[in-house]
Length: 633
Image (cartoon, rainbow, N blue to C red; front, top):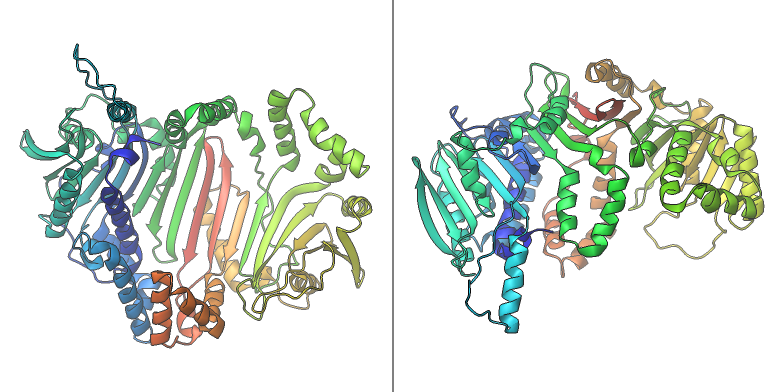
């Protein structure tokens, strides 16, 4: 995809992955709080990155994030005396697994986690094409080895991808210095040489190719921060932006960056703890340039469909305050008009309340408003551009009429209303595939929908069977099977039913029957659940007057229950023990479960609360949000 993958040593790429792993671990595993770093003059990462940055991720302040995590539900759970032995052993297991990688660099997981004190950011930047040194009038070596070398140099000279890391340590950090020394040693083995240069008052260290002078690694320390660049002049250009001597615009001055992140800033009295931005259009386009003729032809099709209208994707996360444990926002900026490929994206705001058939004990509920007729028409216009006029008629409608005998548009598209609902449930007894779902489509005309199913059953008699449940007809999909099913797994029963103006489909007959009992009021409904009512009531504060087309509700604790029950089962422990002979990670988890008796599930339950998400459509793009309530004792 880029020059970076070819000229970075494998150890450099591994170290980058480990640095990313350390960041993730900092989010979830570092309960010990280090001292807050003093305010510094280090610019925000967007002011050090070019406006042509392809992707960017940033932690506002690692120390503050550790404080918030220690006060979060997960942090309190790990500090619980009843759970601390298990949590501590889990962290020790992670440390031992990391040691297999860290030993090569002389670093422990704790060492790596302790590096960032303030700002931590990673940017993916597009490298400018670099000239390839010529030998003048000197005869060229035409040996196979020389030709391969020249081709490799030309590939590296093409525009590729570089990385910029900004790490605030608050002062000299011995661990980071040791890591940089190891990187230099690894790159030196490939022929690069080390050079130092002072620019202004800042010394910049480079590992460069002796044949063309292009830097492969460069870094500098300033004001308690370290800037590391992989790729030619990545860190040097960042230093020029820091000093205000760069000619081009920064990422902070990019209109696309401002448009996307401006929709993800949250309320006026909060600052995002973590932010993310990507320009998927240019990121993929850069990869296509190096993908050959086939990739270029495919990309040309996507260009004609208008993918350049995607101006960027951004996201941010916040500490939730008094009501919420955490809040996240994401935004996809799309230029108007929504034609081409975006003509099939036709969300519609409307009713998002749970239907009466949704039981109260579901693990998740999602409602999506969508204009299926507009999506179908948009798909038709796209196919007409490549297949000629009337493509949907030839490819879909005529075959349907020949095989089934009906009108596809009237029988399928026009029957569907503008809403779908998806719910999940943990079907007892708990097994690996105990999580079952119902996908439901709201109907404009339930009688017409039943007639459509009858037409399909007549055309495919072995694919659909029927049974009666009271006054309702249950549709069973696929031939009846009597073959033995593996122990420890739930036997799926694909089926469907029309309840009122809804068509429900599932892989569990038990779940369908449970939905019927909820509809009849025999068992409690989700709409009557206090947790759902609380979550829905808090939604208004996040929407800002917008009408959502998507609303979801999730009970994380119930999802965790499946993992908990599986972890306790002898079958799972036996599987992990056998897998541990080949997989160190599986062995670590197996040993962890052998050493510790799982606490009662209620000890975990009190640290989890329901979460919800929403989405709404607006002229500038599509906005998403997710939030989790604070657990109550």
